[in-house]
Length: 395
Image 1 (cartoon, one colour):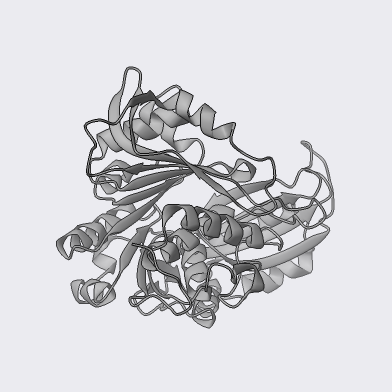
Image 2 (tube, rainbow, N blue to C red; image 1 turned 90 degrees about the vertical axis):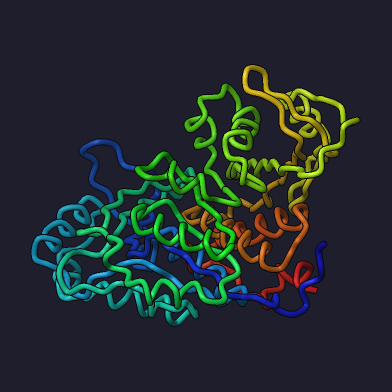
């Protein structure tokens, strides 16, 4: 049952395990060609990483997130050379590089999360190694972004998370969120969550090492557009979603995010109606698409009745199909899509905690993601709970 959210959900604790790092964002007039020399039109250093971004989103919405990840408090000389080399590609000035060499990036990662209300007391902190970082080129003309990611080294291992810390982190948690990174540690977290009957949401951004083991334990999956077909080898996204529900019997719903084209969600129905008609999933998706009214200024959701959805060569599952539209952002207001998927997931985590119905959840997540896209970086545009754009969902 859904309920209005004029007050915070009763259980607001979300535990996330995954990436938290630093983003170096440079905006350019147009993406450079090989051997081009161009200047950035704006530049920003900001916290990044899927888990760090999504949990920051939940914190601003009023939840109490706890993050499990790893940072390093000192920047090694090798890392400084690495930073210099890649940032030179972004044509930043030499003076800035010397400033970066003296920074303690790990402290900044922790500080930014703490300022937003993310509990970092379960982070593994080391004085040897390098924190994760990403170089991001934002093309002002196409509104696209290109990311060059360097993982933290050495990566987090299960030994970096004492059992006492894990148990404390999970104490009172409403849901666990895993972004698919740090897979060995994430698997330990997931197994303990299963023991404690804490539901798990997986961010399936792309095929990753260890993801198959994690996704088998999930209750909810949110996928990037290409993941369902890459993971299942199905010919269409809708067939792939049916395949995922059949392969993963514990999954309650799976969502494929499609950027400006919104999202598709398939929700499992536990109580199967024997009289329900069997429908080909691709045809049902096509019929729902035709019901769109063409206006996406306000996100909308179109859903099918509970039915037996059939994917040829794959199988049939009793489920309900949803199409969520994205919010239309005028070109003059669309700044950067970096982290839009993380914002969407952060909103879905909130919606689960608040017991939103699927239609409300998808519209809410689209609104939060659109707000993020109006500012440079993954976190600058994340809305707070009291933001007027969220008023209709919070009453």
